[in-house]
Length: 141
Image (cartoon, rainbow, N blue to C red; front, side):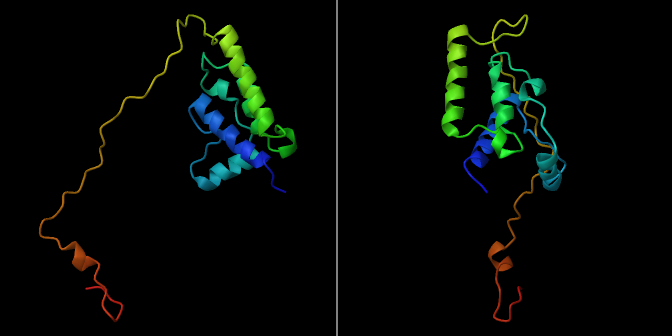
């Protein structure tokens, strides 16, 4: 039976992406990704891309939200909200964690590449309306 813990699983997927910078399950196509979702346990998000500013308990929360068995997930959204508030209070009280040698948290973005896909230029002599004309017999001209 479905209950609110299915929504909590979705929150876990979003939190994972926010921390790790990628989805928790990888696949070369949708079918492989769904199979991975059912059969694999993701690597904790902090191991994929450690964020110096993420509180230590965040990995535990995310992994509990992604538990395969709904009974192993938090019982409801109030519990998740309470745990998130506690993590936020920890950051407020202690400040963000820092990696050794880190002066401050950093955000990095990949450089934007110019597209190598050629663009089609409009043909001024082309009649687009005629391409979409369907006659009574069902054929296009």
